[in-house]
Amino acid sequence: MVDRETAMIDAQLNSMQRLERDLAGVSTQGAHAVGHFKDATLRKATVEQYGESYKASSRFYFSTSRELIFVAETEERYDRPFDVPGAQVNQRIERVYYYETGHAPLVREDGRDVDAMRSERLGASTSSFAKVLSRQLMADYIQANPSFQSRITTFTYDGAGNVLMLPSSAAAPSGSK
Image (cartoon, rainbow, N blue to C red; front, side):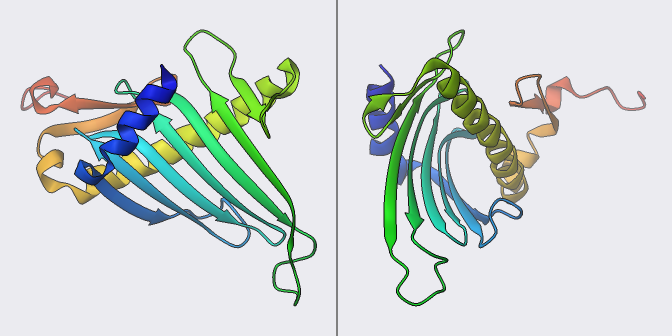
């Protein structure tokens, strides 16, 4: 089911609103994110991270209810710092993460299942990053869309880190504190 949903999201990218931003504090050499929104909901985010000795590319997919459902990442590690002449990729790692509500994440690395303990750790770390990423992209989306801003009074986050938007009709009456 996840594969079908991610394929559907990818097929609809051209009709989605696109938002780009640089991510501060994520990586020593920089990081860049692109978010794709449908009906004010982040459906896909891609992130490119650069470090002194690696490059990582990640694709995050979200359900219509804003839950992380799938992540695919590729990490390339260099044999020496990238700015040293002759630096080459000496290791390539591909991971996929499957998330299902109420279940521990399933992580596969280079086509093989990762043991449960490592899967839990990797899955939690990636999920945590996805929450921060979606918050940043959603805040930028709200700021970049004045027509959307006029339909909401404010937004907050629930315990799972999802953005909760309060429509203007939910605003406190004038004069209320």
